[in-house]
Length: 96
Image 1 (cartoon, helix red, strand yellow):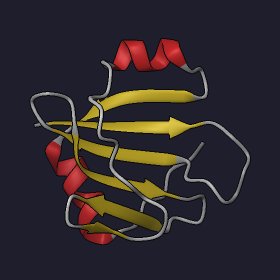
Image 2 (tube, one colour):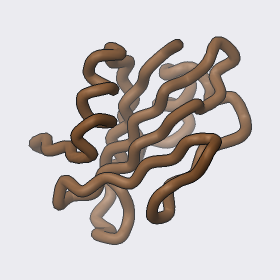
Image 3 (cartoon, one colour):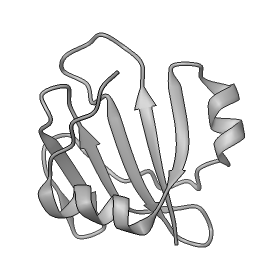
Image 4 (tube, one colour):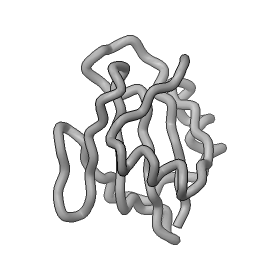
């Protein structure tokens, strides 16, 4: 498994600003967390979702390609522990 965090640089309060994904060996999302400016997070799995969160069915490109494709997104690889912390608490607060 691989874990990534995307910062979505925008000003729309109805859209998430942090997106966390757990990816399988083929780069497909297994679990996703979408967190909003207020720290609240929606989640998605193959079994269901909350809010507007949904898994992407296509494999995600590598981080460099993601960054080059759309400058609104800043992707970084994170650890399983970092992902699990956000997944467990369903909240994420970060500066910027």
